[in-house]
Length: 263
Ligand SMILES: NC(=O)c1ccc[n+]([C@@H]2O[C@H](COP(=O)([O-])OP(=O)(O)OC[C@H]3O[C@@H](n4cnc5c(N)ncnc54)[C@H](OP(=O)(O)O)[C@@H]3O)[C@@H](O)[C@H]2O)c1
Image 1: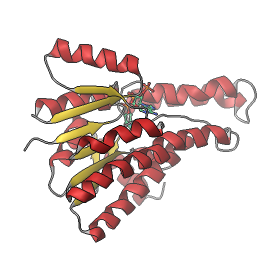
Image 2 (image 1 turned 45 degrees about the vertical axis):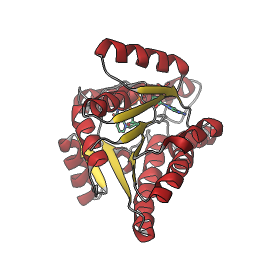
Image 3 (image 1 turned 30 degrees about the horizontal axis):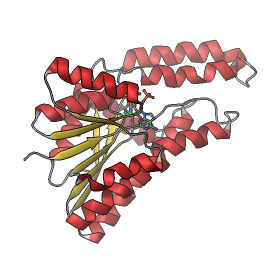
Image 4 (image 1 turned 90 degrees about the vertical axis):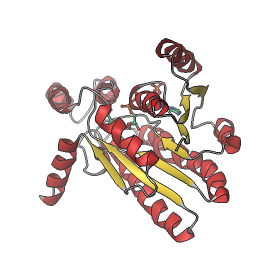
């Protein structure tokens, strides 16, 4: 059955690919982008592909722009928009962590509350949170991002239990991608090297950390978004989605093993 689905941060990466894949399955997809420039490019891509998406700019940190959701009668909200940041917790400016939480957690939650109002009134709706396997195991030097995803996963699981108790047919699920090559991980890891160059406990190790991070992502990153997009589709279309969807599967397995062995 065709659903009305809104995706945030759909100008690039996983969000954009999920938007086109959901539209190809016959859903009415509202693909929102961080900037107007991304919206223009996405509309052009729609023309090239011969696919229909409803596209507009929605910066989730902007309260007035979040209100644009209110009249939309959404069946599914996919909270995909996020930023990445990194650096040792011993020295990274707390203001940087605060800004990251503003996008990845607080604004995501505020947008969810706007969508929930209509969904609860209509007694129907699904909210997906694109979290991360970085929200399952602490990632040294990526903790600003990792902590924001731990918090988001906790929020999603807690909200799911609350919505179950409310009994208004509101479904909540977490999508937890492993490393996927969209450019997100590279800009997240590189963010810290500018300020680390100006003095850091880890200055002497910066080159080693950089090489290590680049090796790990080169080794782990899936080259395509296909596996995680399939999970997003499954969760968006399910009558009763699971709590968690993880892909690629081997990265999910690594996380399970790491947790079993207490890493
Ligand atoms: N790629 C991975 O390995 C990976 C792994 C685990 C989880 N994830 C999660 O998957 C989701 C998509 O990531 P991706 O890899 O596709 O990276 P991406 O291409 O950077 O996607 C994130 C999108 O969110 C947008 N955004 C940032 N701040 C925003 C705001 N305030 N309002 C609206 N949009 C905003 C970004 O715009 P700009 O490009 O202008 O910043 C970008 O279009 C994110 O939630 C990410 O945390 C990714």
